Structures are given as C-alpha cells and as structure tokens.
Length: 248
Image (cartoon, rainbow, N blue to C red):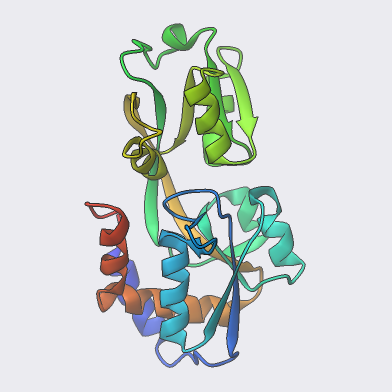
C-alpha cells in the first residue's frame, strides 16, 4: 500500500486543491467510533476527523452532514454532498455508481456474542441461531452468501440497533466489522460479550466515495490522503481511537 501511495504522490503532484471553498461530506452517524454524535450533539469520530483533516489539507471548509446508510450513495448521486466518508467498503456494485479514492483503512469481519456462549462458527454450530447484521453491507452479504439456510438473519438499519438486540437477547450473534466491534466491547454496554471465532479476512478495503466521473475531486482527495499519512496526521487520529494501527 505504501508503494501505491508513493506512485500516486507523483501522479497527483500539482493537482489544485482550491477548486471550491467548501467540501460537503456525508457520514452515517451511528457507527462508533467512526461516526457518532458526541455529548454536545455534534458529529464526531474517526471518519469525521479524517474528513476534517482532508479539508484542512485542501484548505477548504468542511460541511459534514448525516445521512442514513441506505441513502448515502443516492444523496451523493443527487448532488446533496460532494463526498462520503463513512467507512464504506469498495465493492463492484458500488463502483458502478461512485468513484473511490485510495483506501484509508482495512477491515475484517467478526462475530460478537455473549461471553461463554460456546457457539462455534461452523455450519453445525450456527444451525438455528439468529444473527444480526447491518443491512446493505459486506457483513450482511457475507452472512447471506455463507450461511443462508443455516441461520436466521435479521438486518438492522444501524449497527447500534443490531448490538442493542444482542444485549437484549433477541439474537444470538452480530456479524460486523472488527474495528467498531472491538470498540463496542470496550464500552459498558459491551461488557459480558466477546469475539466469537476468528476474524474473517475478505480483503475489504475502506474508501471515500465521490460522484462517478468527478475526477478532479477524486485526485484532490487522493493527494490530501497521501499528505495526511505522510505528515503524521493520520496516525494521530488513529491513536485517538485505537491502540494499534488500522492502516493496512
């Protein structure tokens, strides 16, 4: 990945970062620690900090708004905002609708359940279990592709809703991204729960989306992303949320 960034830095050298004064960015808002509402009711989190750092590098004002996960790409295509910074996985289906920057972190999937549940992540161990997932994500797609007919899948509009159902005992497991799951396990609500089984590597890369064909903004964001990684800003943001690197 660092080789890719080095090559990209040459390719994007000289790209103007001042084509507009405000960059309108959408995030999901219910995906801690990447996006959430803080005690003041403001959007916060890793994705929000990354968006603000990119805007700082481009010397533009960040206007960050929340939109529901299922509506993020539609809003981008309709011109409601310029970019999506919402821990969005690069998938072939999404690439038909948007253009993606260089990835800014990597992701694996994991199951979370009650501590000591004894559930084994095998077709036999999961038979008859109820598993929650955030709808329209790589997690729900993996669940359907791998365990269709084995588990009862319940899809939720937000990760918070899926985890609340787990705490309430309405479902046996949640499958989701490993990093927000790790962060949740550190919270009071997450106590009494644990990772179930091994992390699942699906070669998932997380990127920023812009409207398809907006190559000028795509180049500017790539240039800014390279800059915040090379000048240490990215690492400072990373350390604010995780005691380990999430960058590849």
